[in-house]
Image (cartoon, rainbow, N blue to C red; front, side, top):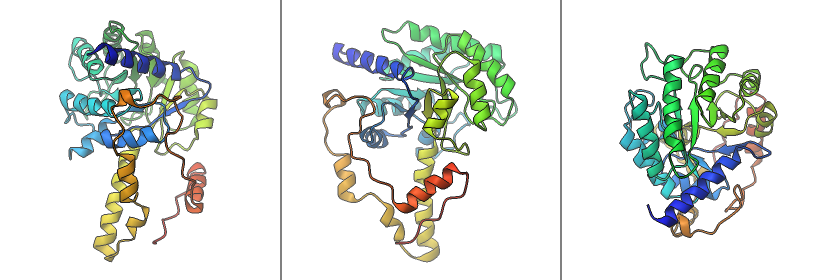
Length: 324
């Protein structure tokens, strides 16, 4: 790595770490390739995170079955990090290794790929025994942290407790696990699929490190509301990838079932998308900006979209989009 690249990675790493101590929680959306990374960069987010599930879908594979290997995941993460001037953290699954030493090697490889952070979860990938014993999981987190501390920049290690995500809704055990991972040195704590505001508040109040919460699913809370509960970081996992794939399936269904093509009214125009993804120089050559400052003007919501935002907040079903 060149001195310039090393300096840039250090800058990104320190900016990313500082975001966790800001006055408000920040949203880290999850692109699944270089193109979506560039689009999200232009929307004004301050950092990005990869999505293991979203990437698996691009390969025509399901998520959660250990079907995507470490080399593939890191190649995807490298392409995303190279496509944006923003800090990028990665979904590193359970660390891609049977031993703590192999987890530590994953952290070193992630840093070499241009990442400034990564998450290690306590899942096993086995349907009959989906979550590791807490002691074993904490040892793996400690190995990740040790490897991160040996780097010449502050690599942010996020530790994930997978109980709720794996269908084990045990809040007390989830908190016990997060405390163990905090003790092991994790910088950020994360329990995806928490069911409600009370659970989010309980987790945030039980630990001393910043908490990441997964949104884009059943939980109906805004950025402001999450901040009031103590959340410092918000990710959306595979929900954006699934939303894009949902649009594709609905478009194909319209063609097959009705023989119509109104779905095109919701698409970005050809010139607009080409302009958004057009030549912009290497990420290091792009102009610096304040993290979170949009590079593109925000598009106002249509009345229909605004109503669906209200319905989402209130837990109601969205209004089907009108044909155009």
